[in-house]
Image (cartoon, rainbow, N blue to C red; front, top):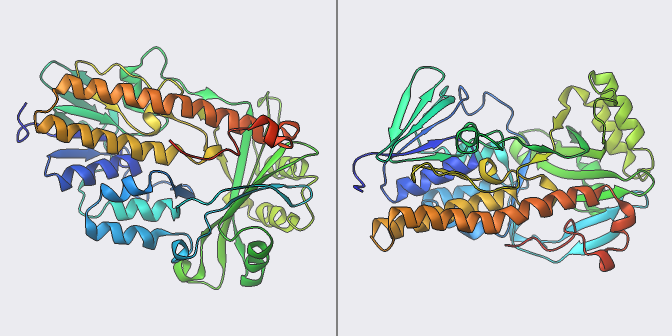
Length: 400
């Protein structure tokens, strides 16, 4: 197959799609990337993402000038220079530490800024929502909602957990599995004194915990510092999640409903953390509910070797092990390495596709289920309190 004819198509300009585009550009392999949104800022970009075991792979896929800019995307400037790497999990009732996961190299970055950094030098076709995919032995064509079409030698579905491409590769099982847990968070503003107090007693980057009296999960993390946001304040996220086996039975439609539920599920939170709950309630205009769902199959019909899935499109997972982004990076690294071998005629195109599928399924499929179990364990204090005996994946080392 000639490398100077049909381009590789990338559906989705999220982190996985843009990282793929940067890697292909670096190798001078033609590609077309398109996305359903009108622009990079047309929707909320979420909060933060931690790059840890895939950090080196992430940097290796980027041109040198962009590698340096990645470190400018940290939630706290130059934090990596003095980061202990510890991950703290607490008894959120007593505020005592339950476990410190050993140090590891990591970067906690702002999702929106890292995405804008990855956009540098990449021409995205916006407002192009994938509606139909047609694959033949020779090529694959994507038809978009706005009438545009793109034809290439391979389609990479990188649209995220609700992937349009997955609906085509997996028409019988593309649906996500919803966990019996509800999650709500908000962006809150802390003064320098408030942030320093939290940092001194807990962690300056992020920490998590469970309230023993009601099995509610609590999560605090920094979003941006005054150096980034141009104010005298720190932007942080405060999140709660709780067991909710029957979501239709819990009143959760209005802002007032959500405030009432948060006050209920946060009862038992340590008094030194309660001010964060109060700030979250006061910031109800910034409430963000996260659908806790996953897709554990990590497998797809490649349609004659013309389609693959990467990232959340291939293995959507909940965030309780902080691994989704890292597995997406591992997907991209694997694909690019195999693509280079194929271009050098060390392996055939079918061998490349098969090797990619087999590796992703073996690596990411089990990771989805580990993250699912970590979520369930986060809402089960009886299991967590005897961590040394039970070895929950919630508190185990994050690694490949």
